[in-house]
Image (cartoon, rainbow, N blue to C red):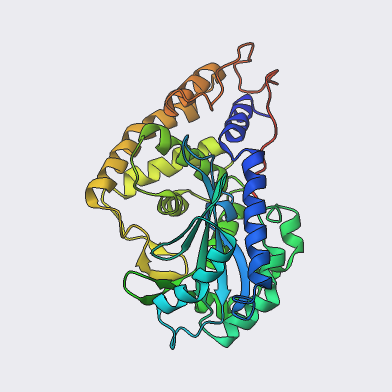
Length: 360
């Protein structure tokens, strides 16, 4: 193993969700989904449920101090979106949430559930057609799709794999996004979390498993380099990285460097980012020009440093430069000394192998 790669492995270990939080999230979403299946309010409305968000796509990092980890649960229902308004859809599900949880908030497009250790977003959706509903039922997403299943090996063996890999011409779910109620305008809007997951899985394959780790590294870079800056938020940033990270990269360092270079070269102005599966939706819609330019300038300043760190053949210099890139964050290990100068040497310090992403 490259000595530099061992530093990145430790870095990724240090920024990922702690095992204790992973267990809390798993417990929270499992209990919620069991309640949905058995409760008299929801059992006849429920088609299936599955996870979405950075937790499901394996791109989440540990929360900031004072913040909780969260998980999004997509609840696919048979609510008739043509006869039921968005507001009415929430009225159908809110009593269920209030029955099991003390701290429940109706949000713009979800029901927020606040627990002691973690937060859960219950996202109501409607299947757009009988064909999509039947495909989702057949896929058994609630059984096949948990964060622990999406590993390079188990993923190939479950029904979600078959669901994604069926010829797109045979799939209604790809052509017909789910519909999500919006309480602000009282309308139903298209949303395609399954396509986002499928796209992420395929991108990770094309990058030898490095893509999701590049995303996590650059999310951490933004946090420590732009503290307190809200935009771009987690998913828009992840989406943008996905558009800019080249395929066939051979390391996380290469992915970071080439992604930043691509942004600097091709996107000096805020782009329109078509959402996965809903191309008319701009992922950067809520990002102002000023917010984008602040982000772009930060990228422009960081890109030469990443390039220098990536191209350095001296391990000590490279580690020092990467630590500077990450604002001397303690999560990126310090140089431990006694390293060869050719970039290949074992480290005595901890260096667990970090998976090349859960999307095999």
